[in-house]
Image 1: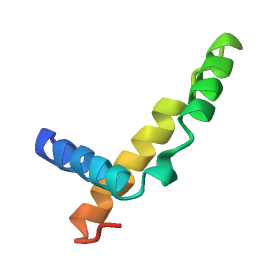
Image 2: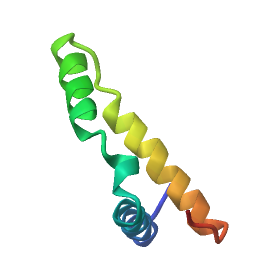
Image 3: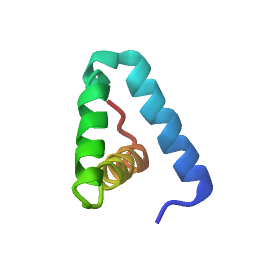
Image 4: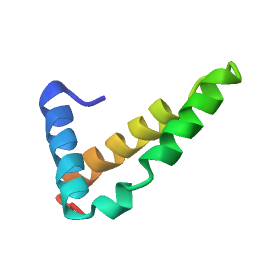
Length: 68
């Protein structure tokens, strides 16, 4: 589990990656639609789990000294 400093570093890295390659993250409307569709269907939206997995991967990258 990440501590607060690790989480802050991972979030800063996430933003750095976004700034460096915004097209990679350019599917916001698709993500919004998926979230709303899942929520309307009474499902737990997958967005949180996907973001958590991405944040954990960034943390692992930072811990191993790698960044994209």
